[in-house]
Amino acid sequence: VRAGRITVNGQVAKEVDDKAFPHEVLIEGQPIEAPDGLVVLFHKPAGYVCTHNTNEGATIYELLPKHWLQRNPPVTSVGRLDKDTTGVLLLTDIGELVQRWTSPRHKVSKMYEVTVEGELKPELVALFAAGTLQLEDEEKPCLPAKLEILTPTTARLELVEGKYHQVKRMFASQGCPVTKLHRSRFGDYTVADLE
Ligand code: URA
Image (cartoon, rainbow, N blue to C red; front, side, top):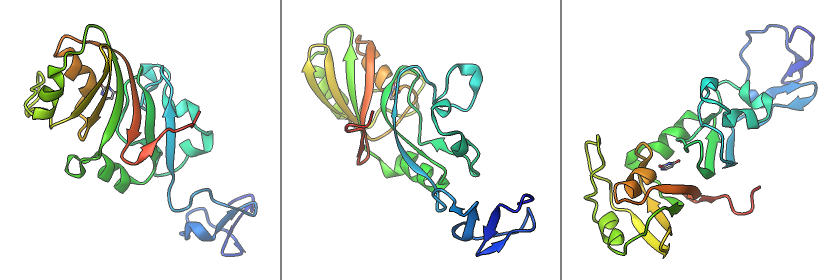
């Protein structure tokens, strides 16, 4: 603003604290990116945590364009994936979308591709579907989840909730620690061929 590089509705902006409609603001003649809010489909790689706290190691935010990090409200992930988990993660600066996509009421479906140690027994399908699996330190049992066993050590699991480390805890509770986890779908969104 002070350098005269901003126009609002065709007029050079004068005051830093003037209010303006984002659609009417140009920076050096260019419109603001995503003035109505940003929604990003992100293919999370392994090795990055979903937090703004840099004490926990490399964060997904390091992988984003710098100017996204300067947006206000800030760009944030819709829920979190563990450091070693890969796959679909939505990012947005629209608070209502975070609410809607993470609220237990909305029961957004998520698909996970799971590799485990040990052997996946066919009985797990009925157990996970029953809605009775009680994880330690949780008030309520897991909601019914759809398990498809692909091989003795690989499976696909569809969940409509997101308790802390839920997938890993579900399989670990049955003697099958997860060694690899990939989220292939979040709601209607898949990574498809996104790098
Ligand atoms: N469940 C987990 O255990 N980890 C994830 O990253 C996502 C779901």
